[in-house]
Structures are given as C-alpha cells and as structure tokens.
Image (cartoon, rainbow, N blue to C red; front, side, top):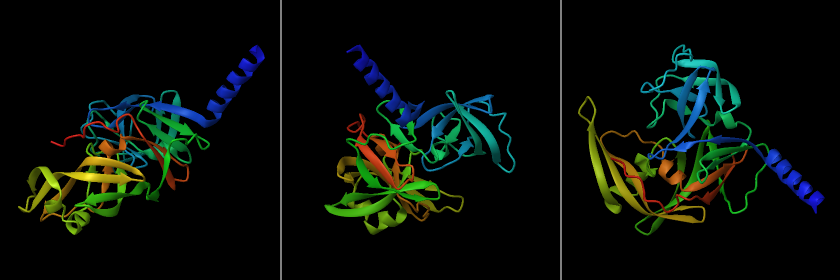
Length: 282
C-alpha cells in the first residue's frame, strides 16, 4: 500500500511538472483590470496591468512608482529584464507615455507567453503557463483569429430578436463589457433598438461632437454560452473613431480562458464571476 501511494504521489507531481510550467499570481481590481507585480531591470518595482491586446510592455505617464532604470530612446526601450516572482523574462520591449488602467504603472502584454499555452484563471487569480496542452475538460473551443499580436473572436449579438454575428477584439484594459464599432452601431441602429442607460457628450477643439452611450444588450452568445443584459457602449455624433468591436474586461472576467500555443483556438469555461452584476461606466 505504501509503495502504491508513493507511486501515485510521484505520478501526480510528475504530471504537474510536465503540464503546469509556471504560475503567475495577479490581482483583479474593482475596475476588472488584472494587475501583475513586477521587478524591472532588478531595480524598479512596478504594478503592470495585463493588456491582452498587445505583446509588449509600456510605462504610463500617470504611474505612481518610479521607473528610472528603463532607458528610453524616442519613447522606446529595448533589452529590458522583467522579473515576476522568481522567473525572469529577457529582451522585453517597453513603450513610454502610454496610458494604462486604474491602479497600474503601465501595461504588460502577451509576449511573456510566447510559444506557450496559457490560461487566464479568474477563479484563482493567476496565469498558468504550459509547455503542453493542458486538461481541457469542461472547456468549450472557440476559433481565434490572431492579427498583429491581437486576438479576435466571433460572437452573436441579439438586437430586437435579430441575431447578428460580429468579430470582437479581446481588450482587457477597458473596464466595461462590450464596445461596438461605429459601423456596427449604425448598421444595426443601436441608438434606436437598445435600451440606453447613460450618455456623455464630448467636443473637440473644432467644436465637433462625439456622444458616448451606454446601453443594455439583451443577449450575447459566445459559443454555446449566453450572457444576458450585457452592458454595451457605442458612439454617435460627428466624430467617428471606433473602428473595432471590443470584448472587454467585464465580459472577459466571466470566463476562464486557455489559449493554445498557435493562437488558433481559445477554450472557455464560465468563471465564478459569470453571474456578477455588470460594471457601470461613469
């Protein structure tokens, strides 16, 4: 019996070693942003917000912690070392003067997961990095479109009982639920067909207006999973800047995500936040 127990324990430890190569803890803020504690160039202790829509790192002009040991030329800095826990990542590129989310000194992208499977585990507030395909039991595969280091997925949007498929950029930096492109908002008359719960008018130096509107989308379908009464933003007015649909942090946190190493498929499963109230954009 003792020999069997030793063998079982050794097998379990060996399996974990083969599959789960690294674990990176993170903190999820009240604004739905993921914060990772880092040490940059062995000197600068920075809290960086994970941004899935970029590969590199950046420093915010509004940071509260010093970044004196990141040397920039034309707002770029090559060859940096980022330490997370006991693991060091080398030759990391930083950009300067990029605004970031609440409670962060800058952003960290997906470059640290290059050529690896990785999991965003909202249930346990951690990233898990794998060399080999992990256990996918209970997860649903979704096709992933990768373009210039950014990830897009297709989802169905129900507007007045009419189902419309659209591609969404995964965007973990924006605290809200969904943002629609100007084209999608116009084509589907979202201003008339969705329940509006708030709006804000902005003007540029030329007096042209842009109106930001917050609405409720009755049904949003990702794979076979349906979210109800999702907060969705879009813009009206003279200024047209929103070219892409965003699936943002408040929707992302409702799932655990496993990305394959080739970035062609992502696997999702409902997280503990699935039925939480939606974030209100003020």
